[in-house]
Amino acid sequence: MGREKSGEMAFEEFISGMRTLYEKKLTPEPHWQKAKELLEQLVNNKNFKEMTDSWPTGDGKQYVIYEDPDYGFVVDGLVRGHYHAAVAHDHAHTWTAYGIVSGWERMTRYVRTDDGSDSERADLQLVSSEICEAGTVDIIPPWDIHTESNEDNRAVALSVRSETLGHFDQNIFLEDGRVSTIRGLTRVGFALDGTLTQADT
Ligand SMILES: [Fe+2]
Image 1: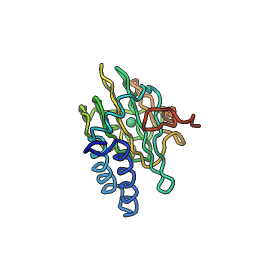
Image 2 (image 1 turned 120 degrees about the vertical axis):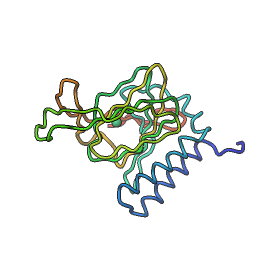
Image 3 (image 1 turned 90 degrees about the vertical axis):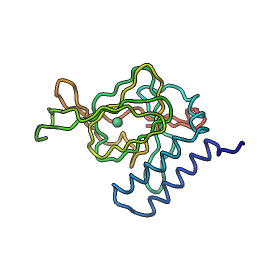
Image 4 (image 1 turned 30 degrees about the horizontal axis):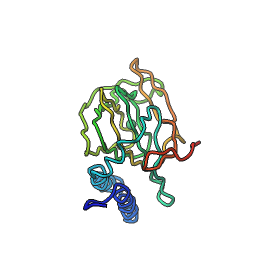
């Protein structure tokens, strides 16, 4: 290979950096701030970005690239087609570092203005709506209400999560004020070269 490390090597370094970070047993805020810095290095690696150019669009799917056997964190790839717009949702009790590898996405955040006592209805207020460019990483704390959306651009993102989604309810917040729950996107096994490795349950 040339002077720059390969995309695979950058990914391996990220995983090993995350495992070293977990060994430090930091509290969540500093832990995820460090995870953000590690993920920034990965999503800014030119060779890694080029590797994702061939990843197939996966609307409604999350590509499970890595699951850590000891610490439980996962790395999911998300490849959005044009005009993807998630309904407002949270990631329940989990933490996420969300890095844009290619293209851009808009991150829109909300806060509940009701007292939270009604499990079926919520009043949301817009907090912020920002474009996240390729190479940037956002932290999504537990219960943070947000949407990701794009326009006529392809967007590739990596979600580094404190644990895998799909095994517990996440809240979704409908435009008419109703609250419901989902069990996340369809999870499929995925290799860095863009091949689907196995169907996940
Ligand atoms: Fe999300």
